[in-house]
Structure formats: C-alpha cells, structure tokens
Length: 367
Picture 1 (cartoon, rainbow, N blue to C red):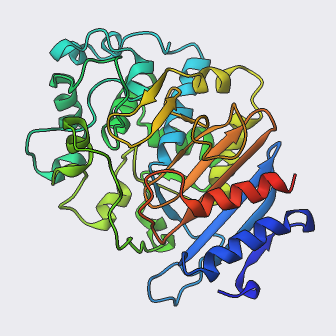
Picture 2 (picture 1 turned 45 degrees about the vertical axis):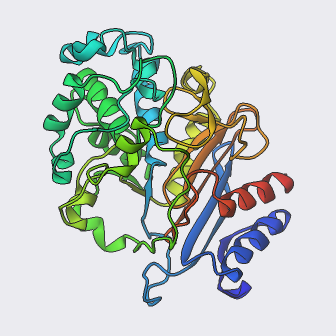
C-alpha cells in the first residue's frame, strides 16, 4: 500500500500518525482500515485506506461499516452508564432486584457492576447447545438466569465475550423498556448522526466490510472451565444462521457495526464529560489475572481500564475496549481525547493489537 493510497484528514503535526497508518499497510498487515482521533469532541485525524472486500475491488470508504466485535462493549457500557447518570439504575444494586429470576443458582448477591465487570461467573455455557439459540434473546436470558456461576461471583474477573451483552442488554431493557440497540439508535446515534449500530438494518448491509480472518489462532493461557465455556466449545458463539441474520440481531457484546469516526465521536462524549458519568463508569471494580483472557486486567463497569497494559496510550485514566481481530475505541478524560480504529483484516491478538497501538502512540507523540 503506497502513501498516495492513504486519504483523509491529517494536519502536518499528525504526520507520524499517517506514517504509522501507511506502515501498517506497507507491512502487509491491513486489507482496509480507518483511524480517527478527536480532541474535545473535534475530529483532528481521520485516515482511511485499503479495501472493503477480500477481492480488493471495493475501496474502504467513509461510509464503510466495519464489524467491531467486542469494541461494541464500550458502546453498551456507555448506554448503561446513561441510565445510572439519570438515576434510573445504581451500579451497586443487585441484578436480581431488576431481574428477579436471576437470583437462581446462588446469584442473588451479584450486583450490576459485578455483571458489567465480568465477575458474575457466567463467561459462557458449559453444557452443549445449538449455536443458533444465541439468536433467541429470551431463551439465552432464561439460561443465564438459571445458571450456576462457574466461579464464586466477585472473587475474580473472567471475560464474558458474548454473555456480557445479554446481561447488560436485559438489565437495560428492564429499566428502559427498549432494547439497547434501539435506544442507541433513537437517543444517541440518530440525533448525533453517528454511524454506530447494534442491530444493523438490512438496508445498511451493503456498506459492510468483508472480514479476512487470521491464519493463526489467538494465544490463550492454560484451559480452564471459564475459558472453555467462553471461547473453546463449539457453541461458544452464535452460529447456524446467515451473515445477514447476524448483522440484524442485537448482540450488545459482540456485533456492533461502526465507522471509526462514529466510535471516536461517541467516545468523545465520555472523554469530555464533566457530569461524573465517565468517572463513575470507568472506576475500577476489580483488578487481577483474568480467568479467561491471558492478561491482568483492571475492569470498570464494562470498560477496560488502561493500566496496567496501556493498550490505549499513556493515560492513567484512559479507558475503552478492544474487539476481536484488532478494533478498539477509547476515551482519555485527562486530555479530552477519544479515538477509534477499525479494520477488516483480523489479527490473532486478543487485545492490544500492535497496529492500533502504533497509531495511538504516534497520535500522543504528536500532541
């Protein structure tokens, strides 16, 4: 990929970001990608290049939607945080106080913030099931409500790759009355003209980038029951349905579609917040070796906090989330900075993809 194929907004002071973006392509690490950075809500860098399809016939354009997988969790955490800020929900209240059936299996003490910070012990389902069942929200929520945790809730985090979205989504629905994806569209994305979706209408599908999967598998640690249920059983993720069905469904943990600009501008709401919403949502709930991901992680209420891994630059208060294959979205409230990286050539890195880290490091070095 030559320098001339890179396009978009990049003032001279941010030339190192353009250089890093071009280098990712030159190294053969990209198919199509976009990186966006905002300061105090104003987009100051917006670079894109490459192809939206595997045949390299459709350019990766300003309106190309990328599947962002678990970067969706940052959007979901933001939507729940708005309920807390409005006084409709308390992070410290039990999930069962909102969703009575959830008290089954010894989960009566699980709080909202424990569920959002991956402490509920529900990283996946250990018993065999049809992967298509994930498309039945009511059935999955009933299974989660009845389930006995895989570890004592509150004693450790164990990443919930898909179930997080059903937990957060059901909490949201029971408070708000709407699905989380519908509320996102009606309250945030629509009014602010943000190209961010959880549950993508069929009319938008033609804009979606095709994914190129990595040749190697992610490197997890030693297998544990929590890890197996989360990632390693055949039914760990939704399956058995079409790509169109996947895009239309609402999986608030895993199937968001967005542009980098849309995500960066949404995260700017958090980066510039003065109400306390961002500070409350991003405050540490637990820190330690995760039972699923091979990292020590500091979790907020659905957000991955920057220390100790520093995936999102140097900020001590920065938070965000990463997605399968390499995407990420982050907010830095100390500097009023937000950003997002989306792509369609997946890497095998579980978190902290080197491509995004190089871009973020170059952006901070340019400030």
